[in-house]
Length: 187
Length: 101
Length: 312
Image (cartoon, rainbow over all chains, first blue to last red; front, side, top):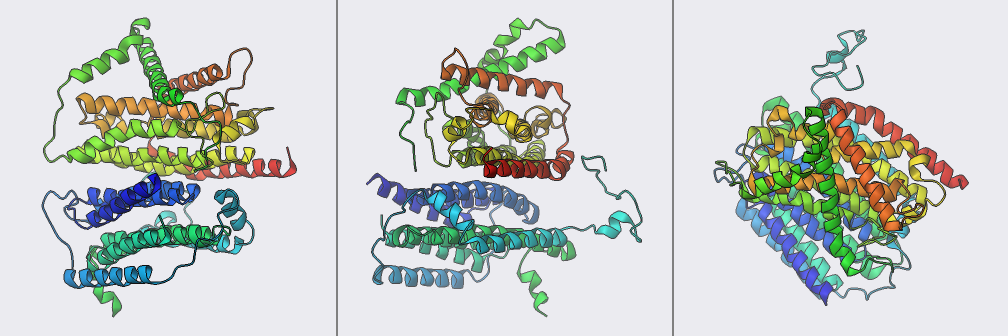
């Protein structure tokens, strides 16, 4: 009973915060509304006995949203929302499509016969997950690792504006890189 | 609580995210919509795991993959935004439409 | 959520924030004593300085700034102490924690990361340039300290084979993890200073920005923010005890007393370090974090993993 009430509150709050993301004018508030939406959704994961994944989502989302807010403030005009603004195209169409998608999904969810609950988790779900990704599902984690590494390299290459020719000179002969700010390890 | 309720929550989050991704002009706001959609996937995968196959860890691995997809999406999205912004001082998808030529 | 059978009695849960506040006062008083000693004024009188400052802030009228975002500003400041209290929920005292989660280490980490959101929001909400610069500085510093911090936490969990904090404390029966994994312990102390923006990592609220993220705070808001900072430092010190210093293990005194003594000692060390060391710019610290600390902690984790595999 308590669980159902908690779930209802978190579900409504999560969707409401999600809607607020696209309604508020201030970019800081939009980002923090998205963060609130994630945290409420993570609480519903905790109700499913996924304590590790639920807390992991909170941990990751706080960090991710704080990075996101930097870019929001950097790239949006009027980030503080001191003047009202809308930056949308084809608002009606988007609204119609998303409502249509929700209705179709909801109809499917309510009409389809879903499987009856299976056996509960035998032990600690966190341990199950750990043993899976270090055992039978190791390939998945290895692919994720490679993808994340490729992402780091690609994102750095795309975002940086100073290549090695800027740092080490045209013939790459400079011993010390010519950086505007020197780093902390004495280079 | 039942599987249907969790799936309804996931559907609602997906719809909100879809609206954002379709209607917003700024790249950063579009990415917020995408994140909401991936969040819906996380909720749905977790609910499927709990209600149908809690004795197997497959559903949990799917949640981990979704979390990683979120991180990749964000890193690449911001990198591309930064590159486009540097090249032409825009951050709106409409202004980057000529990229398709 | 997998609480263990031995959870704390209710009065313990109520007492926990009070104990954290007392530890926070200890940190503030010790800091005031160090300041007084450096200035050559009587050190004993400085013991009451935090109380006097709190009373002054309580009666001070709140200033407002045009164009501020009061909601985010106030909420951000309040999140700092709340995150600290939530973080210590998993710290076991005499073998019992208020909420001894099976993933206690991850919980502590998640609550501690809330500080990022809190400090940024406080800096942003004030609509002040100093505040926003301080907020950005803290995010940059966060990116530098967070990964080594996570690896240090994970190394302790790896040594005990459990993410439950009381299991980690219990696993140090023979030898403290501070001795077995000194690099992880050192990195944990460094990141404790950084997460409470204390000591050499206080550029986010630095004097060169006239207070940085806290520049425009006044009255109760300032009190909550500053108390939260000391509470966060105390929470980090309290967590170091079960993670690296053997929990409540010690001769003669009861277990809870040893926990308190060790926490107070770590806290005193952290505060003293903050007074001794010159402020580090976070752009320099970022390179140190990524080029030195991350590989070091990874190596430490590798060594501990090998030890665990061969069975110590």
